[in-house]
Length: 342
Image (cartoon, rainbow, N blue to C red; front, side):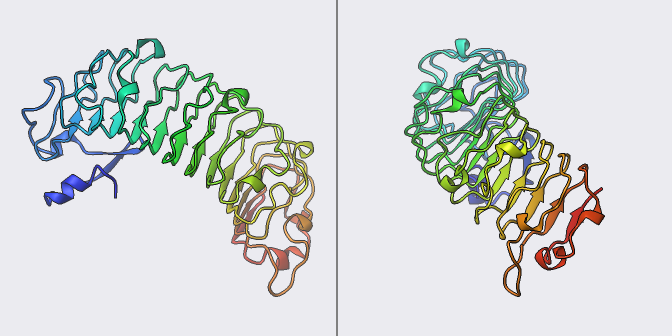
């Protein structure tokens, strides 16, 4: 249950919840009139007085936030700057800060603003003009989204004390492998990392062993380091589609790890199917250059108890057809619900 919903349940108010840009968002019209303790440019519903709605109001700057506000919505404005003092009343109170879809640059964020928010749990800063991340001092931060900016660097050590951070989304930026080399140092609970649509040449280094989801689609990755996945024993979902992976960049057995449930290698340059673990359930290999099917990629041997758990296999847009499937696939891939060739 999200923090946003708790106050509503406490007063037995039933509202329809909807998703707005990856976070739960209650339309102001559903929450009653605004209370007196609110900035005049925004609304603070009486039924949810800890939230201040300033979204979609053509604001040019962040308004002063009054005492008692924990959830601040500023998305879909024309905000260019965050001036000093606007958060002085809530430095130890503000939990959610939503700044998506504005025009903010690093140069226009005054000292003593975000760098004073010691209780922030969620920071949404997507669709702006940041060239490097803005990180609050809060040790309670658990979700960070800085998508669709102009990030080209991520200074090492920024997240050192963020032991409660579980989700980071940095897709659609200009980050390189070198710029992320020390970015994730100190993290202990990170579960999800999305670095898709950047300029990485290899999978990010230094990610914590707690990671369960890693998305690195649409980069320039041409190899996977031997033993990379062995350092991530909890990893279940790995996506490296739309990259430059060829057979020479895939060390033997690199994907043969028991934790993986889904592996997406589609839209690369592979000519053969890499070795996978028997526990893998989803394998996406469409739009490569695969010209042969070797059952040893799926099963070294089969018997009544030993077989692949693969359920979905995509091989369409390669140089093979159904006729290339070996007879022993019936035993090895006995749990496959669909194998797609076209």
